[in-house]
Length: 107
Image 1 (cartoon, helix red, strand yellow):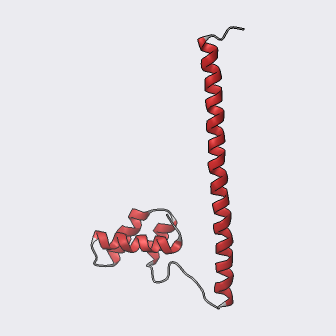
Image 2 (spheres, rainbow, N blue to C red):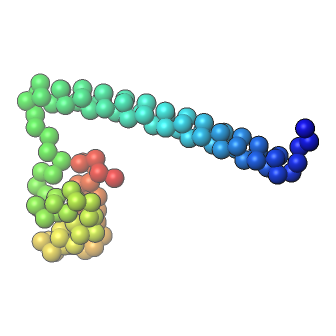
Image 3 (cartoon, rainbow, N blue to C red):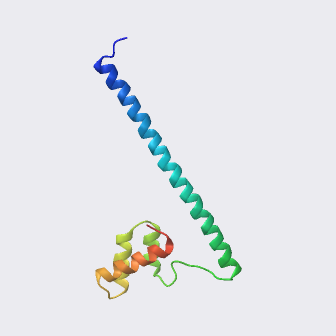
């Protein structure tokens, strides 16, 4: 059997796809492991808060319009709503909204 350039390219392409698929699977396995670890930590934290009689609300004291916008994934709208309700600069409103996002675990 003679290895033609087309056959060589086909074999090379298949090998490349297999290597990339394996690398992608390796990354996904790592992500799944981290998600599982974070989920266990969150469950333990929830149990500790419950046992201590504490109630955690990441949106505590945040205006309802801001919370609503953030829950819908509308960060810019949340900043706008916060500025409508408070006499602050754009930077201050952005910092406030990002603080609420951090507490709520929203990226």
